[in-house]
Image (spheres, one colour):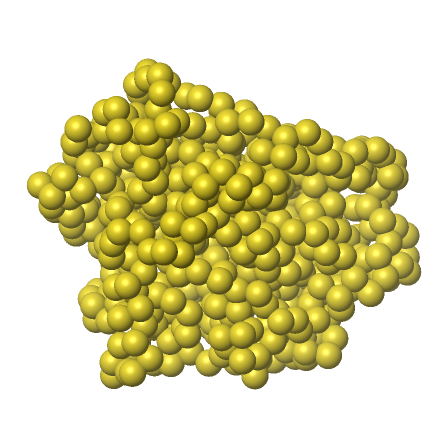
Length: 572
């Protein structure tokens, strides 16, 4: 049975109370327990490092099939990648390894894009304009991914690997928490949110298997059985001639793979306290648009548009008049899909309430009843010896990049001033980092709740001016751009962006803050590949060969992956 979302009119229940008690115990930053002391040490660190990219990385392997434009390659193992020391903010001091103490050790998960591939409001048909056949013309990208039916299985495989790691590969300290920095879902739908929460909580807590599709649960009803050559069709013979993925890029036949990818399964769950953050795909239709009334009607319906009235050419969207004609002409190719009310879009309050209803720890996963009452998706929590400040960077007026509202920016300034006064180290978390806080749209969402807009909106320069004025900030952890990138910022602090689960290289990042007890701090970052199984491993091979987001994208340089990031301790 799938999770049902409740309305905002709720009472504060027993489970929420017990969860808050558990949160206090987990996040209070108290001295190490006997369990933590037992797990710490070189042996635990060595065992953990053996399951990370410190020991094994992945690279393009041999050619499996040739295409007219590109070859389809295997994913092959390669040697591990050691930590790279970065000293842009302060120089390393000798002997720090023997003096270190761990302040917090956690997991960064981002851009998981748990997707309902049978949704009637997805616009996969726009993806054809961005495929490799069109060269550098990329007006629309990643509206469809050949592997996306396995999104929940990919996320579960990552959690299984994280659970197996269990401890820091640097100090051996137990991983204390995980944080998901947005785009947890793909299209702001209630059923996608239920899938994501079930995946993170795990079947042992929810008491049910994870069901990762909508409509008719016995069969796949989506674009990969449409017969339109613009999509990869795993089953042979669906198109009269090989589809463009097979013809141009050498993609294989994989009969029955869609059913295997979408079959219900028992989710492992995070196995640790986990926190959540709002992303543009969680709060906007397809990550770009406020939800119009028409979208809500289409979402529950039984017709799925799969193409444009005339097959597109590479330049169909370079002429605005031609683009409008392509997308609005009646009679667009469509296919029947079983109607499903659980595909309905969720507003921000409903999104946060669903987190409050989750059986996992901590209660609300960062959100509290205050967030629901005030309709704000930002909060403060102390995890280990570090204060976490989680921001909401989604622009309610639309467009994919982020911004921060006037009220939230003032709130952030106040919380950082408090941390400065308390001499408390701060990590910021948000979906958009400074490099993608570029959304200058000042229009409100006309269909939002009365308190759903926070205007005017502020972009990176304004936000960085506030953040860099506070010495307590040591790092800003974020996602959105689907690539690994680490930048030294004035303050000083480190801006840490991590790759997406849904695109190559499909990685998570372990982060540990250590006090070197010599006036400096070290932030260690360690990349993690997900566990292997027949579904998730084949999905990774498909994403590696995706003509838009495959091999060569997202990985970043060595300085963006396994690193030791040094900075001066602001309060020593």
